[in-house]
Length: 263
Image (tube, rainbow, N blue to C red; front, side, top):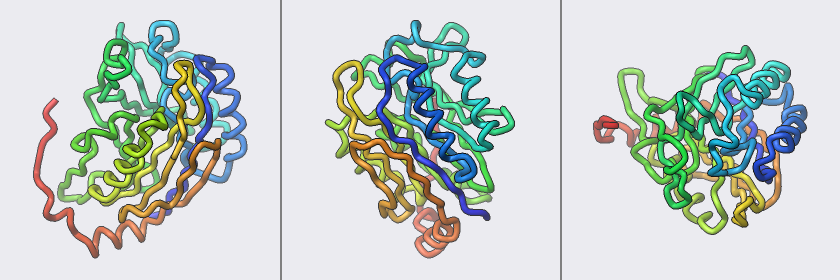
């Protein structure tokens, strides 16, 4: 299978200012045209991690989804990240996987961060979403989901592994960065996959500082990229041969427990 080239965009977010945030991502996307296949933006990339769901939410016909569709088509790449969406009278922290042809998939954050009141403002998702590009299967999750390994656990069938890359988009504060780093590596090792974590930097509207610490980790747990504090746009090509070799030479997955997710 073909290699997969992905780009991580780590940046401060303008608090609850969609216009300013989309403008800064425009610059990043323009610089990546023709150089990558997938661009990953942070959690709630248009607003920051705000609990003002009713004031900031858009529908799937709103301007930010339209912006994603337009930019994905213009630059011929896939764009993913989460934003605040209203649907059927409910608010969701929704990750969108936008293709260049305008088609998209969605994942609604399953685990809401009750410590910050997210469960009081947003409805939990109930389905995982695994995207596919160039033969790679990509499991897309959001921030706090990282603390719940069962939700990310590989399941196996006659076709083998369920996915190859696990992505977390986040607004994860510096005060808990040790957990962020450790859990990203754990998810890579236990699921024998690449793991990508894309976090924001800077202080949010609640005075909480985010150190970024975006990372790319290989299926052995080796850190291929990490960046703290500074804004950065980083592009990396994931090696399918390396992934296959790890899974073949270290077939720990064959001893995994069978299980079902009960929601």
